[in-house]
Amino acid sequence: MDHGTYDQHDEINLIRLVRRLEKSVARSDDWKPSVTLPAEEIWLKAQKTRQKVKFARRLLKNVEVNDFEPSASRIKHLNDFKIKLDRVDTFIKDIEMSSKPESHIPEPILPTLPVPRPPLTPSVSSNANLPPPTQPELSNPDLLSPPEASEKPQSSSPSVSTKGLTIVPPDPDELSPSLITTALPSLLPSHPPETAVASAFSRNFGPIPTNRKAGASTTLAHGSTVLHEELSSQLELMAQQLKRNAIHFSSSLEKDKSVVEDAQGKLEGNYDVMQKERVRLRDRSSASRSNTCLVIGVVALVLLLFMLMVSVIRFS
Image: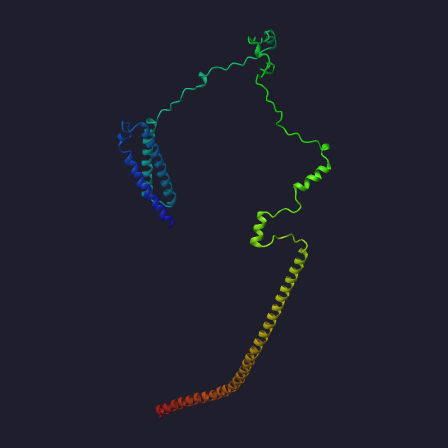
């Protein structure tokens, strides 16, 4: 959009805005306060209209600046706009002054507050003249004595006798070694009888297992021997598998060698054939080149003879 288009838009907007402003201030009754239209709303409406007048003057200024060589009629037309805007602005200012709401300043609260007084500081002399505080007298003398001072009531229940209820251990000096040795065989027999649990276990699962600490070393040696034998067998199997893999790999190489030799023979044969065909194509191209030159020469000779005959017939 060029600069002239903006000028046209400003002028069109200016004309429309001035027309609306004139229409809004044409009737003065619309700007009088009433029951439905209070003075505050009229004042706000006047403020809004003044902003529109300012915008119209800005548009008018833009039109004047962009019009470099205005004619006389053009200047008169713009002056008419200025006069109309001044008239509207004067009317709106009068309405604004007449309908301006009164500002109600509230009464200050500070004068109504009382004047603060300085705090009273007590003096030392006044404190000295005061009588000492007296302690209140207690009418109940029991409160002065601690609770431990009161006598405890004696228990009147009879005591229970514990004679004959305790077991007194014998004196070690009274026990003789001969008495202990004679009493032990009767208490612990040297061959105890078979218990019910042991007999049931032996009947169901055989003899009761005994402690085998003596054969622990033999079992450990046997386990290590078995482990070594198992490892040696696994190593032997791995060696056999490696041998089979090597044999299979060598046989695969033999087969691949024969295939490679066959491919090499075919490639050599193809190379010889291509060399022979190359020589044959070279001879053929040289022969065809000579034939082409001969054909072109014959055609040129025929054309020359034709032109010569035509000229002879024409000029004879």
